[in-house]
Amino acid sequence: MALRHLLGFLLMTGVVTVPFALAQDVIAYPAKGQNQPQQERDRYECHSWAVQRTGFDPTRAPPPSAVPPPPSPAPPRGGLLRGAGRGAAIGAVGGAIGGDAGKGAAIGAATGALIGGIRRRDQMAQQAQEQNAYQQQMATAQAQAGGQRDAYSRAMAACLQGRGYSVN
Image (cartoon, rainbow, N blue to C red; front, side, top):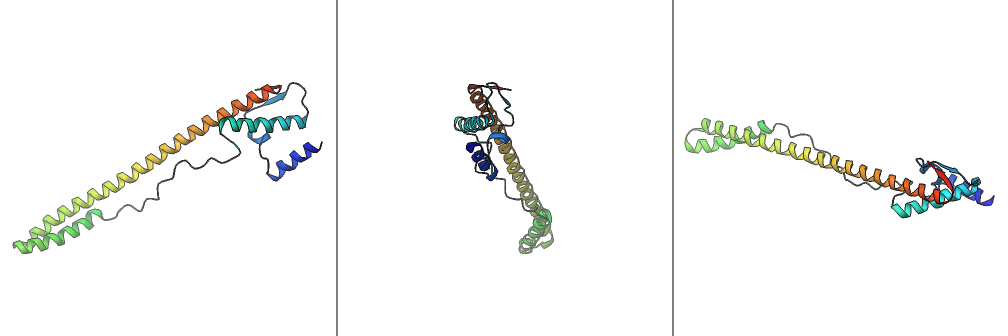
């Protein structure tokens, strides 16, 4: 009786958080007439064994397996216009030296706009690539956690069956 009260106290205070809530997918019937304190003890010991065996503890939050990409800054604004403006200014200076500032400014503006557009496209492609890599890492981590949870459930079931429970 004292063990039952101790286990109840430990469960209520959060020191032991295992037996009932975590083996949710393991349903066990005490086929050999085990009383409630024995069932609690068996579940706790089987949980400990399953964690030791699989390395997965459903009572603990998994560590983050992938670091999300940093928030992407706002897409560059005016890449074309900014590049065109800079190119026009540089082209006007070069054109003035060559005798036709207008023609130099036009060539500079076109070249600057092209370079600005290329930079913007490259930045957007890099952001998309980082986001895709993060999503793939998260999908892989979720699949691994699901496999570990399944292994834990199988280990828990095997332990309880070995202790005389009928396990579903």
